[in-house]
Image 1 (tube, rainbow, N blue to C red):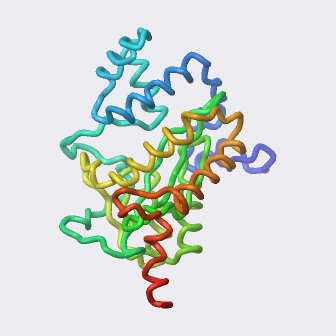
Image 2: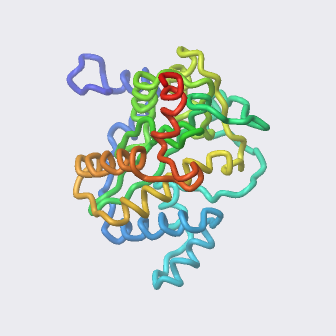
Length: 274
């Protein structure tokens, strides 16, 4: 967004964008192979034991033969956007400048497609490096409506996924997220407001409310990601695209009476057409 060739000085451009100059001039160092291997292990541990914090993950790594101090584990967890899942007091907001919306799902029966959508972001390891994956899911059918990968945790790729889902499938009645800064941003919530979608956000510690997306991450990683070693972001996109097509159209779910997400999502329309 900052253009060195623009006649406006970089200092002024950064000030207008509320961007620290140190951030603009910072050149990130590549992540070492050792740290990428540790991040992959931490990801597996978090997926298996989501209630583990940095201390327990450090101990788990030691059991696997990797002696790492807790500060390093904490730093890598921040990079991966991983947080232990357990009830916590609501002491802080993800971003004090962003509005947090009330939780709307308490006691609600979800019994039809497009009644409620949910989303989340997860870390995806590659052969060299890593990316972040966002998926938007229809709660009733578990259908993945759209997804995106990005090498940064910015808001834009989240908004792109949201806009695609709405363009293809229409607007849901309610959209539920956690309180991550990407989802509380004006850019993201603005899209929801423009389509008159009610916004619901999990309270601190209510990770269980996004359990269906968490189950999706487990399936994606154990059935796809951990079996591959993506050489590039392009390769990750192609392979994940094939997996999500399989997930929606072929993979039967026990919780859906052995039907596929596509079967459940399109069932009301098929019933009306019959």
